[in-house]
Image 1 (cartoon, rainbow, N blue to C red):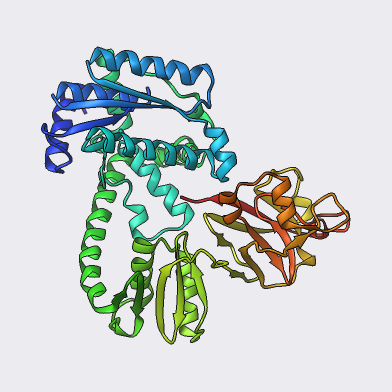
Image 2 (tube, one colour):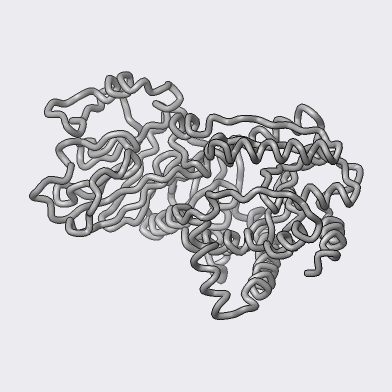
Length: 451
């Protein structure tokens, strides 16, 4: 795209997609990187009213401070109002158990929304572009997703709008160079410890070698997939009216009302994932329970519990005292523990080359386990033998000694083999199940927070 046309395309994309108007008051999220700096330049050139919000996550030392100074200087040059907030991101990660990406995302969007509420901004404007959308498609495919997950990034979600999704990373960079727009390079963008960077730096270049028109082809694919999802959503709206009933905050999905000619499991997945946050493999297990008439089986998303009840699925918010117990069968690939997902991997001991893998990874002697395993919230009276100790300890005392807050205690889950606690998830392994010189097979469990 010629750099001189970028402003014209920017205004056309905003108008065609009804993202905002010149009457709106916009809050631009500007990091100092090339994408958001160009977005600020285009927004100013197009005559929109805006303020700028910059997050300093204090993760890159002087680099983070240099980003802040650049954004403040350029914002003042445009005569726009400037907001900046410093976040204790590492402290928040420790408090919540979230990954860096999850913690930073939650912190910034909560702050953006509060600024909108306080100052009357009508839209939060984010600088994602078409390459970001393509990368998101591959990331979601790798994690396991339905059609909705491979439609890329939407240009509107609530108050959040993304007016740069028409442009490629190259378009934006070329525009910045041609118009002398200053920007900062984030050194973490070159680190392959992050999944997005692995896709960006590894997967995408290989695919572009195969097809030099990769970006253009993927842009068209995403557009078609998005149109297909729009059609499906319209059809599902009709189906929902027939199959869902509500009484207060309890929803019943009447499975028998789904026409036998329709893909029952897919319809259940779309309803339960899009509205209540249930993951695909959880819905798969629920559908198996339906087929086997397993009345009473319970399945969890982050905020909801679904109960199979005589061929129906009853969905309700998780109660405060619900232990959220789930069953982990031998060979399961993952399960859920509150706001976290647990990934299971069975390995020969010879493949374990690092025993010190942090609190969010458990290496367990697989031959000592009795399946199925169970995952639930901790309860008063629970005890375990902390790794490195010989005597048992009440879990309540352990959490007190670790100065775990009441909020964190409510989110604490445990993994059980029979009645034994194997792992205080994300904190400490039980000595009885740790790897020894006699271990032959290892169950490696990785805990990752989810948003």
